[in-house]
Image (cartoon, rainbow, N blue to C red; front, side, top):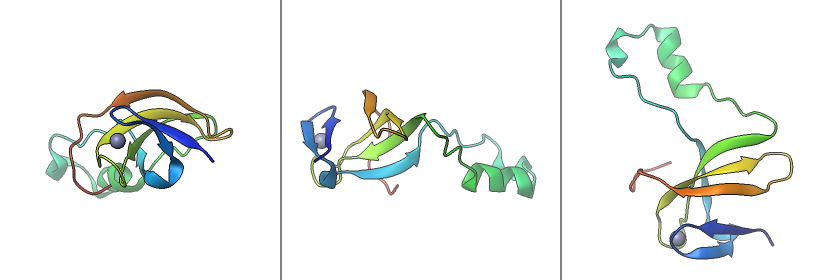
Length: 91
Ligand SMILES: [Zn+2]
């Protein structure tokens, strides 16, 4: 069983968590000024890289809080778990 460390609850089973996708994607300040292609890139294009990736996770069956991690997509090893500024909302 894979254990994931929630910054508030400690280590819990992977089944208590939901992945929220890539972290660090900043919403454009003036979306109306973007081209359709640039807006589409913001909405849909993600790195999905092999190796260390910065991701958002939610402790959905626990405290329900969001946090960010660096996860190795090859070994599934979690590193550098950090609290997130994101509160509530959908993934
Ligand atoms: Zn938690």
